Amino acid sequence: MQWEELYKERLTTAQKAVTHIKSGDRVVVGHASGSPEVVLKAMVENKDAYENVEIVHMVAMGPSEYCLPENSAHFVHNSLFAGGTSRKAIHEGRACFTASHFSQIPRLFTEKILPVDVTLCMVSTPDEHGYCSFGISVDYTKPAAESSKIVIAEVTPHMPRTLGDAFIHVSKIDHIIECDSKPIVLNPPKISETDEKIGGYSAELIEDGACLQLGIGAVPDSILGFLKDKKDLGIHTEMFSDGVVDLVNEGVITCGRKNFHTNKMVATFFMGTEKLYRFVHNNPIVEMFTVDYTNNPAIIARNDKMVSVNSTLQIDLTGQACSESIGHKQFSGTGGQADFIRGAAWSKGGRSILAFHSTAAKGTLSRIVPCLDEGAIVTTTRTDIHFVVTEYGIADLRGKSVPQRAKELINIAHPDFRADLKKDFARIYNQ
Ligand code: COA
Image 1: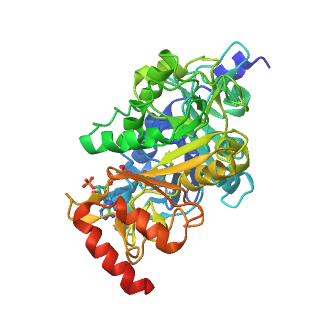
Image 2: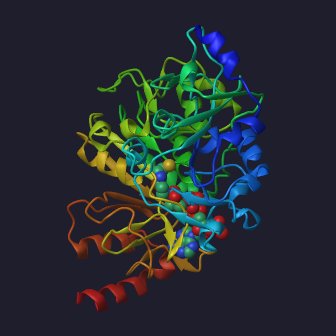
């Protein structure tokens, strides 16, 4: 049968498609800005037909109504990364959290550690060969769909057609919902004076020809503003946002000096505005892969001069960094932080940066501490850490002894906390 006929045969409505979800099913939802909100809404409206449907999702950008208390008899949320809408549900015991490196999530599905019954996703309209692109959410969404019993997809002209290993054939989609839905937009964050200082210091560590991974948020975005005079930067990342587009247009990011995927920006998902989504549409410089490829430390390390930039919540004086919890409370997730820090460590000339404000809670708490809070989760071990940056400067921890590390970190702590940090260090470590 021609794919066009198959496509017509599988066209349905969101309301009909969700009747194929059964009680006890495990449902994986397309990641981040690629979340299929029309189908999710129909699924929640059909809640009386379900008991104990497990919703597996990573960064949830939509309203996540399946997490609300009134829906807890029908859905249980298994979060791979706590966020604005799922954090409360996890803290209140209505949702659970599963820890995983981002790079390993596809294997949870493909190796049936978490067998997938249904994948809900959003894809682009099919091309002339019948292939739809996973667009801005290839990451774990594609492997989940490939190992799922049933695939339900929103097909929308607003999903960019990204290139690379980003496609699914119409014959592999069981229920097709044509709609006009748009990928969720993430507006650029406001950049403060403190972010600017951190951006300036971090940019000092980025040389011409470096290959970058930049996380999300004000700190990574602030660095972009300091890269305008750099030459021939490359990108191998899990995601990038709007700021990167300007650097491509200004000729700063060329990927021309990359020794691996030369002339290509490699990524696995995107979160940004229309500007970013237009940029990645059909753009041959942008090459998408599933996250088990982009975030595999051995693949990352094949790029020389790899620089990873991420953030953290708390770091102790030996260099253990907690980037995902505040004490026992899950705040976010491991994501790709450890993947990229390890990849950068193995890259020839590579370096990793953890950049963050020196204080939290309106300046009342130091984020550099003698010991991590009780319950704090170590996302980046002290054996993996390299550069640490705050608004007070740069600490280089690789190859340093514990007392040397403590000295470096105290030097970039907020001045109000330095004396106490010195005293605590002397008391704990007999120095
Ligand atoms: N104790 C108490 N509260 C703290 C704290 C601490 N040690 N550190 C931060 N906070 C508070 C902040 O004050 C802020 O609160 P506010 O919103 O009320 O001001 C909040 O926690 C968030 O801190 P902030 O530094 O603004 O977080 P962020 O949005 O920049 O995100 C991480 C930082 C570390 C949570 C985020 O980068 C992350 O999840 N990283 C792990 C995953 C990763 O690195 N993935 C790869 C890149 S995509």
